[in-house]
Image 1: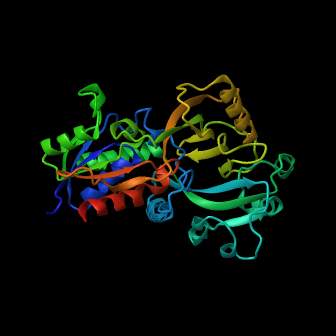
Image 2: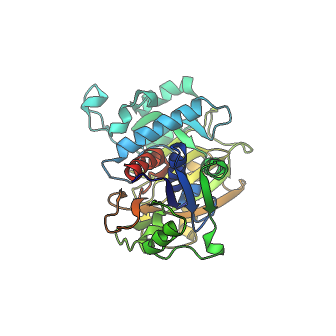
Image 3: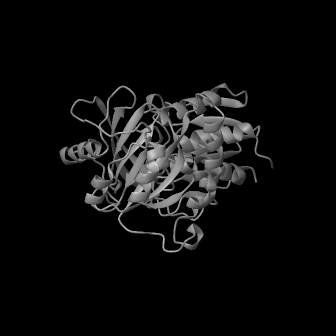
Length: 370
């Protein structure tokens, strides 16, 4: 029996792109979510938006990331007012991760092989020599050497202006002729769904043939998924264009560190230029439910800001705290425990939501319509 109408639950990057994938394939959509995409609790809204597989070990991620990169890359190239910008990125390394002469011969992530990234593994001397041309806004060679960073990855990746992209996707969903109903503020009315069973009942009420569950961390309670854990992230956000910064050169650069003296896997240090903001992070603390930034965390973010040339004393800043839906393996599959309505899960993308959202949406829809 063909699927003609689908209930999509969740309005973050995954949920909205899944709804759009259905609509673009001429499938009618009902969209419901506890919160709207720009609600502070929506992880997609506060994310850095940098395309780079991160904290998601699922073997399918490379496939989804490639599909997502294809769309974001063209989006950035073909639109003057695009919510996607191709940004130079530098990942600081303490040791040489390339032994042979060819990238393909070394134990680098598969995603680094895409020629559009212009990926390079460099010494710091090589990076700064190239920077006489590139004009990247990066710390000095002396500063990086003193901190113990002698190597780096250098590439060019899409960065999504997350709030802008979420708004554009929501507008497309709401204005599409195949959209049947949109309710993205369920908390203010019914309070939202309490279980997977509630979703199935709603699907029947709206005469939907299937449900695609894109509830992110909310699936922990809705689906009793004890393997899903919130990985807490923290950010300071600064105005990107209206302040003077200490580092020389003119080209904003994403800089990421999760090793050595500046960062770790649980307390990464990074700056990401996203839209009109500079994002300073961060953390990846599984199970930490603290809803405000601790004093020592704020002080650490201020130190990170200083490393990247931001005068945190005079700059006006905002703060964001959110939780990535961390899971050992993304739950993207058909739920065989439900018989009367087809149920597909699409959640648990960890820190790679914006890196995989297009590819994951297409795979979920393929399962739904297949």
